[in-house]
Image (cartoon, rainbow, N blue to C red; front, side, top):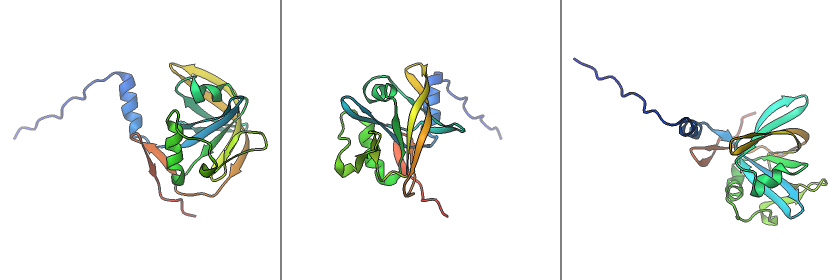
Length: 172
């Protein structure tokens, strides 16, 4: 009996391979907000990660330096909201240019420092940029966390295969 070897992998450009690899890698979902002279801005991000505890620092990237991303990059401070499944529609809204944002019905208020604040977020971290690094068409931001506002935990929201999914709530 003869066995046929499996087909060889089809080579693809590295960038396409990277996209394919990360489509199957779940990432937490955050909404990043800031205040500008023209009003509040925000975007959905799935690239937020912890970097250090002392100083408390996080990292995220944005795809371009225009629109909401450009406004956040030029802000002196911003708030990174780690959100749960109950905010998946809000995450979708902040992922689409021109969608409705910052309404009272969505649960927004402002911190005493002025940044937009989602009161129902699991965690909100008020930050200021430490450094940015341009990488191709993206910008990586390393930010120092100035304040952590803890909310109520829910079912974590993750982004995988171009869609939002919820995970079971963590057990105590």
